[in-house]
Length: 230
Image (cartoon, rainbow, N blue to C red; front, side, top):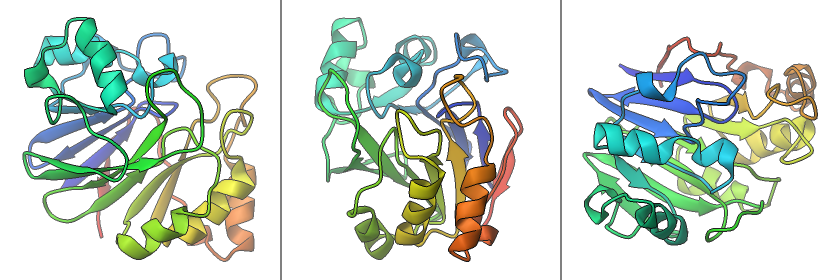
């Protein structure tokens, strides 16, 4: 069975067929995280953009575990300059928006996000696990109409969407994004970490209910693994 663990903010660990995938692995300094970077193992580490609360301890985890890093080419070059060898970078140099790279049976498609960063551009990922289960991690983003295309191109089982507002979508935008994505389930992220962000999921749940999507909401606790089923 595939499992998912939320580590607070936008950090997730996914396990599939004894492989471990980390997304935006911010542990140390993350007030929501219950685990430390030193305690985390990984085979593949995906980073949506270079803000500190997303790149987190990606470099340290890759160096310690030998995990492969997946990110946009400019961020890959930046981390390479900090000591990560080519052999631990997906595609050798990273990849770019629209591209799909497969690693040990896990297909990762990089998609756009509407945000800011210094290295390349912000991204999201559509991840297809070996058994076909499909997860969309939007990264930090506002809503954009192209999300509707992901709902048509891919059978998205689970979407991971920010709801905090201020720096990303708020609950109303994220609910509408859920509708466009046609995903079976949605887990809200990027909330509660900082005082400026939404401190609960109530507004998101209310907006989902308005769209008759209340059943799509999947609430998880930080640090508690959950099984992913079709």
